[in-house]
Image (cartoon, rainbow, N blue to C red; front, side):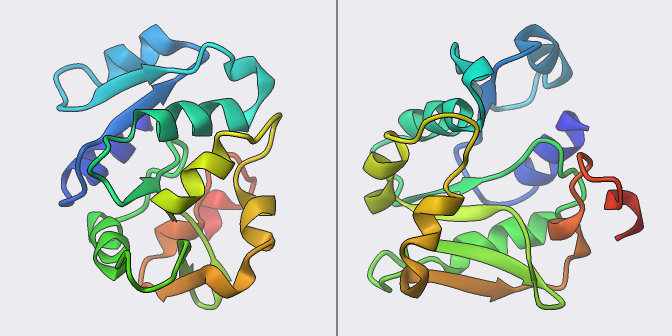
Length: 162
């Protein structure tokens, strides 16, 4: 599953591709062997989702204006969707985050602008950036996509029927 996700991302123009590891880090590295990705370990991964998000954000190179947060358990997102999200972002637009939507439903991956990075680094526990983004709804945009994969999360029981 993680390899399918990484290969789709590598089929896009989004670069660099950073992979955050936690539990079973060696298995993840083995699954992605020979792919042009860099690995960044979240040693405190057991604390929850925020640990992985912070490890990824900390690894984003200085010259990147934003980070596209892709989930390893969402292998059905198309490469074109990654490109569409990256191309939709403009640092002067005022958007702090962009979500893809399919048939009116918000999905993943989410694009987070660099000005949010400091706040993301203060997150704790098993939370992503959802609460942070809820506090700035006027700065969060949507990208309408023709990709049901943005809604197909393997962790959810209805993922394969979406």
